[in-house]
Image (cartoon, rainbow, N blue to C red; front, side, top):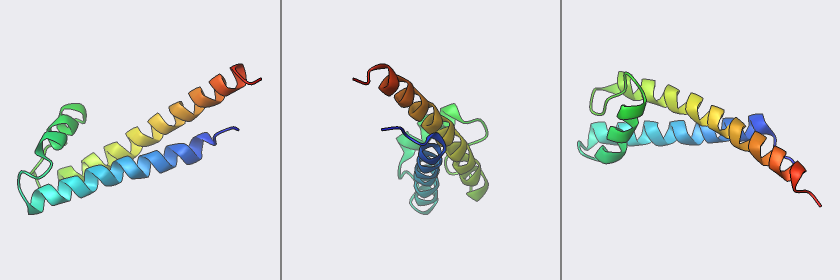
Length: 88
């Protein structure tokens, strides 16, 4: 079975971006919510910081979309290469 790299990339990009968006928005409503997770994300994505308003949350969401998509494409490509190599 072969994975479609762009489909997996888009799926993971949407999921990762949504995770950052929802956690960031929840943190704006309930300060402290997801603080440790958002601190890790802030250490990776420049310009994103928790509790800074809607702008940084949207920036983190865009970073998450791009990062998840790139990661998904790489995972699908590696899976397809290894599946071909180890096919019986």
